[in-house]
Length: 386
Image 1 (cartoon, rainbow, N blue to C red):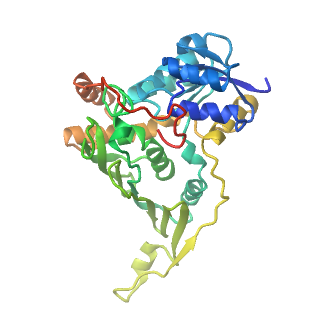
Image 2 (tube, rainbow, N blue to C red; image 1 turned 120 degrees about the horizontal axis):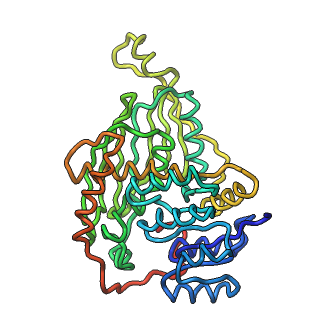
Image 3 (spheres, rainbow, N blue to C red; image 1 turned 30 degrees about the vertical axis):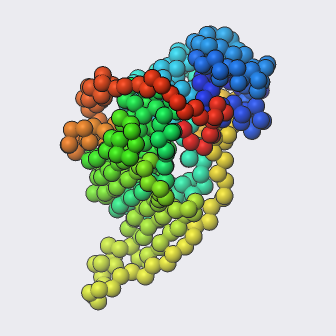
């Protein structure tokens, strides 16, 4: 095999973006041979763009067609583990859009299947390709600045208008999307948070549902976490702030790292705080601190690079950007935040998955899909966001 024949399940906003990248030659080693979607107008769009690409109104038919070696799952969230499972059962390589699913129990079952399958399972965590986050992780992992003491991420530049939420019957519903800003906009941030800082042991959160929009799910969240080493963290997000902020801070023994405005800054102390505190005799003093803009490789290729690495892994065994089994970690944080907010409790990890599903199902039972969707987003979609 010198090229991976790929089919896309769902060619809406994100699926159409992958469609254009592959057809535009941005993904070496990958050829688009089929697409599947339940909406006729999307299949018509695909036919206009690429008449030679096979079209299916049922994803299972595409998986059984013999036309593909790999699948990209770009459906609403509840269907991510469903179609990943169907692909893995057939030993078809599969790339899932984020999040890995809506609840961790389903994703854990997928991970168990993936461990037995001959096929590759990957997830579209494209922000892991961003040079500033890769460099931040490299510095933290090196231990050169000591242990993490505090993490803070204010990620409030996910502004969405009401028309965005009115653009699909499934959007912003417990039964269709399974959540709001945590499930749709923030899976990348939650993944990066744990990828760089590790998983916490405790979560306390406040998720405000319909705070700024006419929706039934959360659009404003403040969460507090604790780590095994005694460090603490705060995560704040919303789709209601304009202008918003995107600032990620990691404070360590030897200073802090800050990502803001697509740049990474290091505030480097001339000695670790605990060493200064133990030896300094002057009362109000503090260690000297130097602010440095950290040089990176400038490489930030996003979605096409995740797909290129996926194809290269299948063809040549090169590393994936993000193995699919790692998708459960950020989802665990989201599930824990919901459960904490719903119950008013501090949630200790590992998560009680059955209790989470029980609480989620209460909300799904009263969830209301929009019957009259008056706004339609561009069929070709916006590739950067969902």
